[in-house]
Image (tube, rainbow, N blue to C red):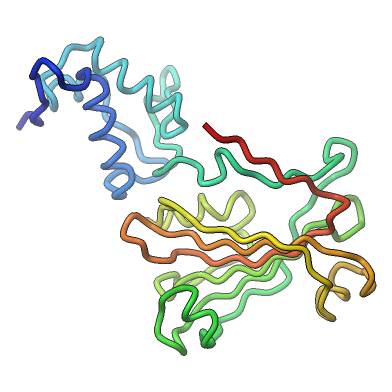
Length: 238
């Protein structure tokens, strides 16, 4: 059965309509990471379009980082949604000269306290997975993160988070659609002083972020503490 496209005079180009439909399918998880994507010929049949139109839609998906096309392999799904950090990122200064390493220090099940439950819009006492991580540059700890994953994530291993936390979420069908973020400069807590090997006079850059899916449900809450002299925060807007 062919998908209905709008052929009226003032409608979007056909390739753009096909692109929008496929992005919606990716966001809904109909195609998962590492799935083989349909071919140009299959999209021709599915939408009743020309091969050129199908190729243009796939090219747009590849350009936006959703899929990757390889000769002899076909088209593979790379991610279900655009990178949530596409225009905003925290960069380690001098990362090219010294190795930056992620170290998972704990993974535990915890009951959501009042503050966390309000932030994630969950009943108080909901069982969450809490992951603590320290990032080092050379041998120096420069960042501490605490991540809270929702109850639908039943288990997490350190290996799951080796590549990217957002890719892990996507593998579970949780796609970041939008987020809120709060930045502030704070005096370090006792725990932060111990983990980052600093004293109370060392200022830290605090970052709290909540990611939501398209239904406005929290899929991740993160608290981060950064040594300010090792980081710069870049925002690119359009």
